[in-house]
Length: 453
Image (cartoon, rainbow, N blue to C red; front, side):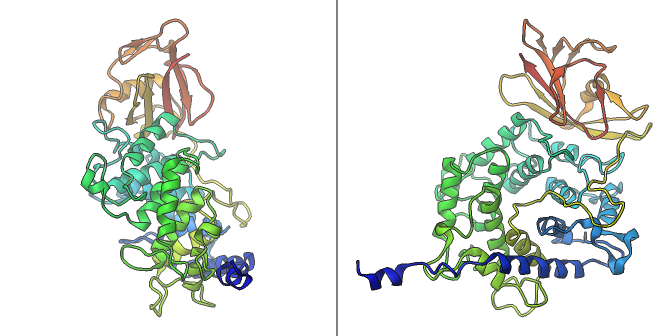
């Protein structure tokens, strides 16, 4: 090959978005998202809710507690959003699992512990109530596959306040298996279920859902060297246009690009690396920044649009900022505002929900949301097990020995302690200890019971 040919095929090193361009995009993007805040401090609305702004703001380094209308800190975005989530009437009369999954991802990014929004609101428990016992790993009707993808994203991505994984790996693994089973032959995914259907698996995949599904797998512990992630990366690579955009099912647009880039971000794959640099030297990040109005900071949905789109601005900013589908909340700059807002204890007489996972070691765990009415600021494992008889979904706990008192749990669901194999308990991914009915349980704890040595 001649030197001239090499020059023609080489990718211009300077064509990718620079750190300075990304920093400017983040800064102006935050300014635009702040402009979307209502006078009462709210972001959550109907339809394509602007509450997704919290994930983008956090990714760009802005705490929701610092976002105020006209400087009124009593109406800061975090406080208002928390009050909305804690309200008895939220999210409406006919909720679906994605309502709670959206709430988990965005409350976490806003610096609200999603399991401790209020004495009667545990979004983690609300989500696991949609666990499909007949199709383990799925959340909500399995035909609506996106509910399972976002369930895995939410339960794996929303860490504890200390940064620990609150959900047991056995729970995440069940959904990882479900997501794997829905990967199409071309390496991507779609919004509807394809597992077990050769015709559906042979259909073309969607850019958006591929980004979300691969992000869910990586959040659930799958490495980016795994064949499923490599196949997804290659699918996206094959859809890259000369502009750096992905050729999505509904045409080139900011939202699809944003979801794809967030998927790459979540898996630690550089969206500006050689695999995602077009022959003209453009990357998906270049395309996103080109979609951003200057100096306004909002992103347009289509390249031909003349006004910014709030939803596209959220997806674009979150991706450019390097995040997946949520982000660890930054510390607020307002004096006295903690990094996390959370209710610390039960309120006696107020019904509360807890997420319960029971793993007997023989296969898929049993998962449910348990509702109990505490008599004090703490409860016991015995209280949880007693209330689990009417949990959602049912069948999580069918029997427990002893059935009263505070002693060691010697048998659960017909499986008895034997030798070194005993029932053990972990709360919010913490230390594993022998399960006793007297074990103290706090508001919002994800209660994990595991049988083994």
